[in-house]
Amino acid sequence: MSGLMREILRTPLVKDRLREHLKSITVDGARSLVKTVLWQDLEVIFGVLGSLPAFINACSAAIGELAREVSEKLQPELVKGFVGSIMEDIDKDGLKDSIHAVATLFHNLLNASPELKMALIEKGPRAIALVINACTTWVNALCREDPALLSAFVTDVIADIDKPALSEATLNLADAVLDQQLGLLAWSGRLLKRRLMKRLGRLAK
Image (tube, rainbow, N blue to C red; front, side, top):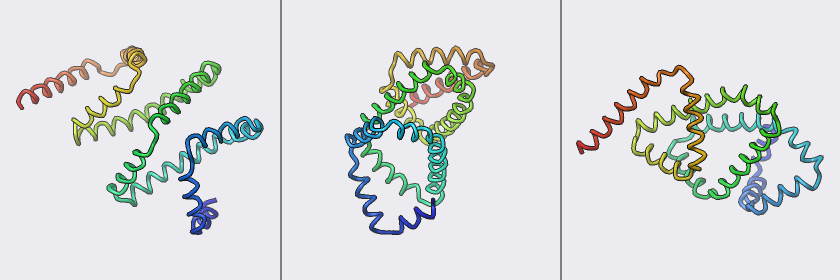
């Protein structure tokens, strides 16, 4: 497969056609394509859905390899400018709508499938822990670099969050966390000390 793609991408005409085709894709066109593929022939779509695990595994490996190759072989400044230009062109409202639609679908699947819910409960904690570890590493690095930037980032995130749902979720999480032996008293003391030092620092200015 990689050999075939290598030969195809060496052809200037193919690269030009591919670039033109990707640039001509529209939001309405993508929606129309999904409806056509989904309802024109259900046998086709179920065949595609059956191959999703292999496709997701391949995409996961491809994304990981892409991240490693970019990290090792491209300058951060170049990547920063490229990613920034991509983010500016992304339809934020469309992305938010897509996330909401996927979340609704996932919620309905969980309600209709007790075995899926059990599988998620069994295998989900490790995946969530890996995500939390990655996020905490990023948060700590960002805070060391610029604490004010982290505060501004959290402010922007909270501004778009569903407040009642967040309140209920945090209460549920707090209740579950309090059932664990995590040294919360020591953590609370460290948090109070840090907040006090931050306040004193502001007063000193």
